[in-house]
Length: 216
Image (cartoon, rainbow, N blue to C red; front, side, top):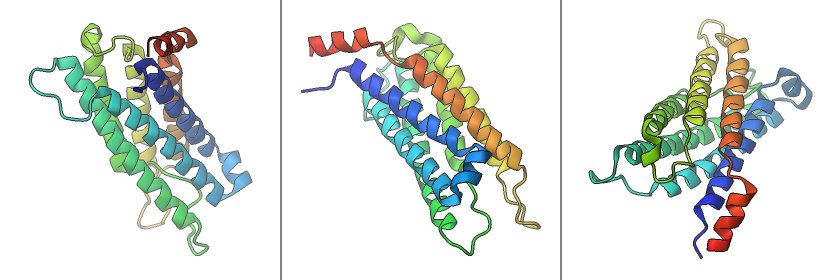
């Protein structure tokens, strides 16, 4: 039996919310100091898995194939937003598991916390721009309630902050230090906070989910 769209959207929101909370937790220096680099990077890796699961749900709701020319402009941009974002989540999977492997190596000094992968951050930024464009004609979307301008702008802000975090996490070849540990942590925390807020705001209410189940 097909899963109702409202229920899938709720699962998508929960996935992004939980993933964001884990990213926020992993970016807090006292937490990093208390649990160590391996546990910190494990936190980021698990968070990235929740992002990927939520991104897959979003992509499946937007359609699994590239939209044809007959598809309206908002739905086309919504599909591209979901596709590029899903690719970004996979890139974060790779970067977080790589950081986890490095942190498990006792000979490695630079591995005290996950740093946003530059390519994943770029993918999230591009995806967020597509989503903002899609919501300029929200009434024409496949589900006008699924995407709102408030949430897409929050995600865009979060993507910009992730980008700043990636810049701050650049390792200077001359010293093997981060360009800015402050922005590496703050950018990750603030960006994840934006994604968390957007996920909570986009979560369908219990009444909507129950109604969808009743119709299924």
